[in-house]
Image (tube, rainbow, N blue to C red; front, side, top):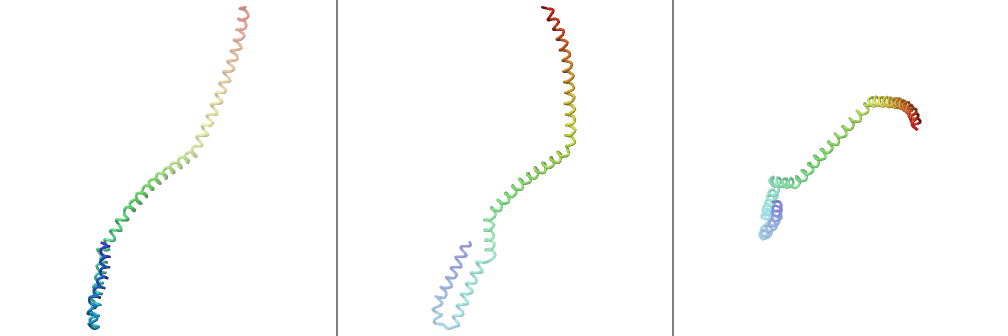
Length: 156
């Protein structure tokens, strides 16, 4: 439609020139009054062509063309932005969760100290049990050796 209007404008200029040429014959023959009339007619004709080319429906057509060309790109940008927003929301949630985990770990130092004390106590109890079993075993082994040595000596 735009190219058609542009062609009409170009043809309007051409028509104006042709009107001048056609009326030019009269122009040569007639006086100043005729020249003024011809100029008015051609000016009105040209003006009406420009008005026709710039009427609101043409402006709306141009607006529609612009929207049709730019809308797919805008939709793509919108979907990209929504995707990035979802990704960033996920990352923010992960970071907040990690921060809360670190904070709870700092609050658990009391529990770790308690566990450390209990482990030390368990290790010392294990050593006491090992020592008492070691003594018992030594006393039993020494008794077995004495008995075994006598039995072994008497048997021969």
